[in-house]
Length: 114
Image (cartoon, rainbow, N blue to C red; front, side, top):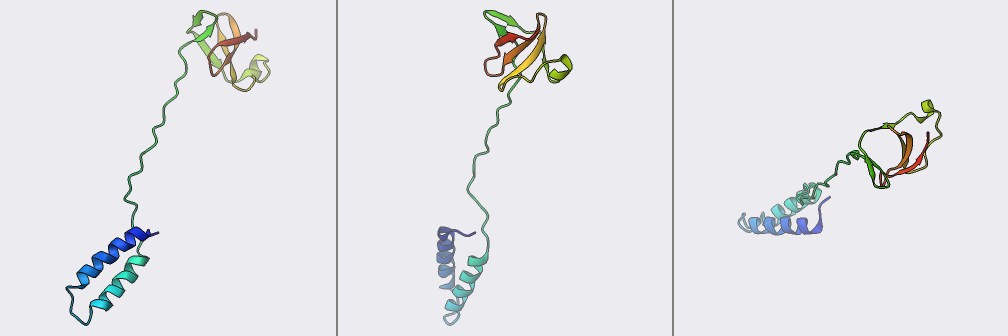
């Protein structure tokens, strides 16, 4: 779709070029060029910034009070462990202390599942 501003710029450029044409054909040349410019789709020349997507990495540790536990495994299939689905925003993790329920937002241990 051609914007009115782009069309106005094309029209003024064509009119100035047509002034150098033969006297009888100047108006015809302008009319043809305006008809062509109004049907031609101009490419978008405005550079839009590419959104930057941050890669969210898995946290390096889970926490309980002031203790940090870096060695844990996220449990994807909780039914094989006989667990109910974790609440929204939580996940289960297996670690040296057993199976725990962890908050996704804070990575804090919320409760011990086993």
